[in-house]
Image (cartoon, rainbow, N blue to C red):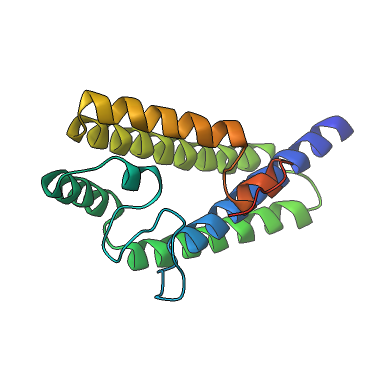
Length: 173
């Protein structure tokens, strides 16, 4: 029983950590850039960021990719508010389970399943978006993008929060 209790507590703390880190990434990834903050790839206002800025996209491709991204992200402010409320509710449920005299494993499993379903949905949406963008690119652009992404992964450059979370040192921006 003690092993089950400890395993459940560890699982719930892991879920909470992933949720908290996801919320940190969601708020840090969507921070608008100001004129003082220049992207290292020389991003101009309204232009592409990251590896996409290095693909020599046509104006049509840029417009198509922006439309895909807009369709994927929709109203970010409303989504953030909704996600914040969901995280608060999840936290309250976890606290109630943690503070209970006996652990309700069925409730823990339900919470874990809810979290897993959300993670799965985010993964599916990310792959669908990447696929849609890939269809806009030429074969040469897809190859160059794959090379740029491989180089980035080889450097271990995934952002400071991600690197800290996975024990990888952050390599300056």
